[in-house]
View 1 (cartoon, each protein chain N blue to C red):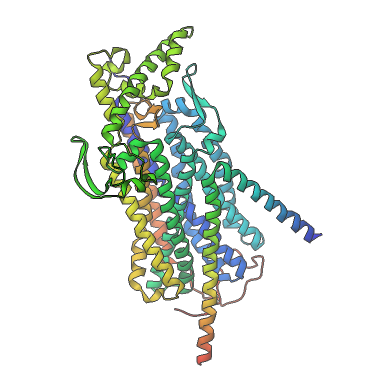
View 2 (cartoon, chains in turn yellow, green; view 1 turned 60 degrees about the vertical axis):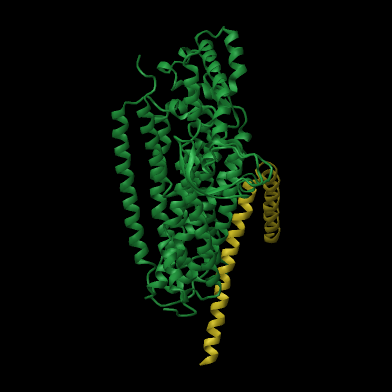
Length: 67
Length: 544
């Protein structure tokens, strides 16, 4: 049941996203650009932070193997 | 006969609105940017489960909260100002202009204000994912708030979605869709919102640089610096390209703004080799640049994105305005006659014939004898035409230099963010104290850029409050000079105290920084079990 609800929820998000993309793509290309661009900025910055954690762990491992 | 409109009152009204708007916009961009940066930090917290990102969100959230409260306080007065100081404007376009402002208050601001409370006090009352959704809703709400305001501003720059009704003497809605999808509003929203992202990024990066230079909570500073540098470099690229798009759109609708922005006095029909003024000293009196450093072959592609489009110069634009002024005078006289007698169909027909130029008739009023267009005759018409035509051009010196200062600040920040992101990604940022110092001292730069950006946009719109339809000088209320001086001083003192309070609190809490880890470590349970308490990260690498 939980899986079904999750599926329905995600499907609704997809339909809404497509609807927004079609409407804003036709009438408001700059609004659409903002939606896509902001999402990209957030995701790349978050990826940078997660990359920082990997670099951090790597450095810690190197320090550990030196001792 | 008493003057209908007192130019001193108009100038004081303009000064008051400019001051309150510029003060207000000291707070807005940080809110626009910080909300999404907080959402980014919290996203990493939810993905990785590392409590340090929650601590970062809470710490930067505190600084955001100070700014948010003062931003709201300064924004409210501006909406009232339309009614008190710009009553003719409010009457003329209130039906259209008031709608996005009302939606902003009822939808975006209520959404943002409600969820900001949940964001601050909901850490221990909801799951991590639910809290993250709330933080995103705050970010979305604050930017939606900006969207509706900029839709209203877009109408002032390029009036779409409304028609003038001679019976009510005001503009009325014809299309809500045209209003919200106005290209000027769209480009202005994305440019302004992303400029807010740059402001938030520089704020976080600069303060993080200060912590790195003073060995304060490097665990938080390094992570914040990384996020802010990446956020900033992409946003800077975005704000520059979107600014170019906005300039292109504005240039098509407001050629006077474009010509003033680039100090182009004479039309150069040799479009390929037309020169772009890198720097210039424009002289309004002499109608030329008394000094200029120009680069050939750049102007046309830079401004028009083509090599063949002719860019009209100021002198040509003044000449092109004269027939519109003549038509506008006819439209305004006919409108006055129709208003005196609504059965006068001849007057209505004449008005309809010249309706599109009625704004130029309004504009000519200030140069007509006793501000009465009917007193213009064959003798004084050339003088009225010359003065009115010259008045269609905004202040070139202000436009040219405010635009250049904004652009220079934008490119400097792009370079700074690019180096900062590069060295941060290489984990070598601490090896470059010079860059850290530069980041710290550049914190105020985005504010310089956005303030000059607004001066470019609004000075360039002059002499109109609604471009082509309603001049600024007929938009103001008929207050006394004393009233305007009194309220101007009051606003200046009040807003200055807000700025002083913001700076004091920001410096205090930024210097204080995130609290040190004195209480031991421990992983935080999902769902924010330690929420509401200061959260202390177990550092995987001690950089102190």
